[in-house]
Image 1 (cartoon, rainbow, N blue to C red):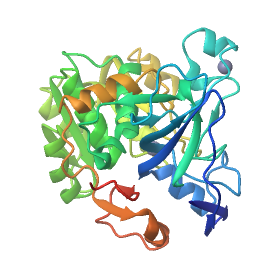
Image 2: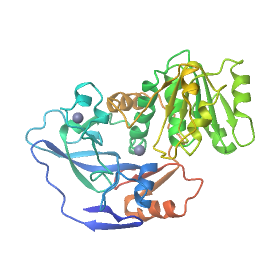
Image 3: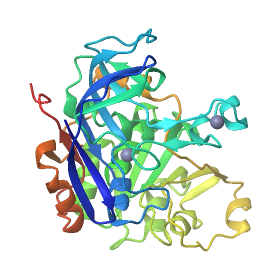
Image 4: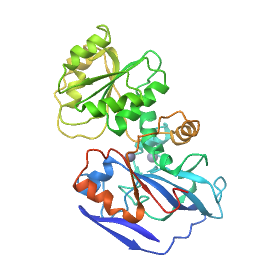
Length: 345
Ligand SMILES: [Zn+2]
Ligand SMILES: [Zn+2]
């Protein structure tokens, strides 16, 4: 079988190895599809401080179970599965208080330890979840980013009365828009600097769009919301100054919630007044918690608009195209899914 290794920043190689045998508590999975995420791009460029090298990347992984270890109880040969990449200890304060995604000893497959860009993978059974066979592999690879939308909107407590502002209409921004709509949010306003990206966001749930390059964001939000402002704002753009931008008066209303997404390290210009003058809640969010099964279920029920969410499909045997696109990005490529042999059947 073949594995894809990033040996050091900007270098990858394909290695040939034996198909691994599952231990008693593991299942052997023939990988079928894997998403390429922004964090994979940072890993390849050497911009992810949590990544080790050499590394098999990949945290958006789905596949077909080909063998199960003697102690496995729930997963069976032939099951279609998604793999949880958040390895937690189960013993620490966070794990015991239902916050295992930020376990004190958290280890993340695809950055801190090897991920799923390989043809076969053995994973401990508790981290493997069965998904409905009816979900096409190319869609199943997007369960992971959809869990991010479900988790971040649940951190913010998005519900019916909400008027949501989303900065950034990349994959995560459009996924958050969908998650908000599914939770019944009254209005979703998407903001970006690209008109074509804003236009695209409408098929994923945007009711209104604002171009921050050509329009005054505060004035537009005030107009759309009849002067009330938004109740929740997500910063899925995450660039230096983006959090300050969405926290300026006039975007989020009193008692609103603000959700920073991503890990920009440049200090922002945020004051206590900006938070306490409106008694805002700042909701941190990282990866996801308990979202794999419900998200896969919603996908099987056709609740998500999948068409066009992934823009690009690459065969695992041609994975160099994924790395080429990191070095020479094509703006039309928003989300790539790697397909393994048999994924299109
Ligand atoms: Zn991801
Ligand atoms: Zn823990």
